[in-house]
Image (cartoon, rainbow, N blue to C red; front, top):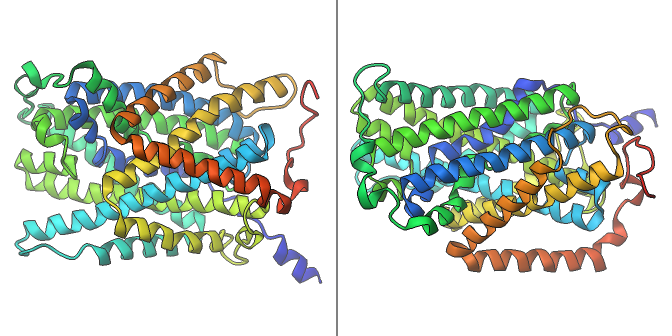
Amino acid sequence: MAQTDTTEHVGLARVLGPAHVWALGVGIVLVGEYMGWNFAVGKGGAYAALMACWFAGILYTCVAMIDSEVTSTVAAAGGQYTQAKHIVGPLMAFNVGLYLVFAYTMLEAANAITVGFLVDTVATMSGHEGGLDQRPFIILSIMFLAWLNYRGVLATLTFNLVITAIAFTAIIILFLSTSGILGMGEMNHAALMSGQAAMPYGWLGVLAAMHFGLWYYLGIEGTTQAAEEVRSPARALPFGTLAGVMTLAIAATLTWYVCAGLMPWEYLGQSGVPLFDAARLSGSTFLMVLLGIGTLFATLASANGCINDASRAWFAMGRDKYLPGWFGAVHPKYRTPYRAIIFLVPIALIFALGAPLDQVITFSILSGLLEYTFMPLNIILFRRKWPLDTIKRGYEHPFHPLPAMVLLGLCGLAFFAVFLGYGTQLVAMIVFYIVVSLWFHFWRYRFVNRGAQFTMPWPKPRGY
């Protein structure tokens, strides 16, 4: 009886520190510096991509501050899903959980597509006529990282820490080598960004570029998924998340500077791996090899973190019976949500093998945007129901409610930018979430574990 009880109540292991939180957040996003962001250049030119980068940086700084306060207080697996469950209500929690799973699973599929593309590019450069079949490499990358996540979170995020640090260092070295700080400068911004090339589509192009400007930072909010597995949530989560945003802002700006100074906007706006292309244009074999490794490592780190985050959200929903309780199991030896990890693998493979890259990126961005739109409501209700003097917080974000208002306004702007280029996908995704909300309200909610709805030892909300 004692052994059975222990097995049933085994939980996730608290083994992570601030560096692992940083590696999870930056690891998921850094691939956005290696690919994807440059589609913003195609939408509005190089200057538009830079403005989109900085606007998105403001948006994600607000996201990081809000997340750091709420997650360091609601330190449980599921991240924003768990926050919504405690602060807003079950229907919002169900939708936010799906936003998270779709955002990370689509991003994982995009990363796997990039791995296959990169291997094919290297094979073509090496003289392999006709390229390689990318599908085996897509499947292998997802299966390997799923196995790594299955075996334990400490090994998973330590692996992420190492390869993310290498990928970030590669960007720094490329900037130093091509900007003239180390050796001869190769930048040619004046010629590449003069006249019509500066803003080829005017201010409308700047607005359209906001869509892919989010790709510089999309996924940093995934640090919240580690809340139940860090040793000190009040210290590790705010430090890792805010340090991650600063790291990404630096990497994004340097990436734009190097690529915009080496490639015309017409080519840069459609490049599959812009940093790798920049290294090739530098003429240095060392830089080309280094950025090839950096691209591969950034892609693997992102896919690895996405598997970690999507499985935690799916696991938390299963544990509370928002989904079948079978998904809420923890491996008795490895202390991981192994069933959630295994279940999401074929979904990622379907999209990675059957959907174009820009569509997969768009679905990930849309799910992320819906999640960010929820955050201002979440923090306003959190502060209203439990003011600062009622419960202890690990971190208190400043200037409230200004970050929430800024975030809400920028989300509205980003939705309009997405609508300009991908209106059909936006409408289809909103219709999908409305349909599953109706399904949850009229059918699934009867199975929800009502006793697990409120698990935090907080006083009664003010006004109730």
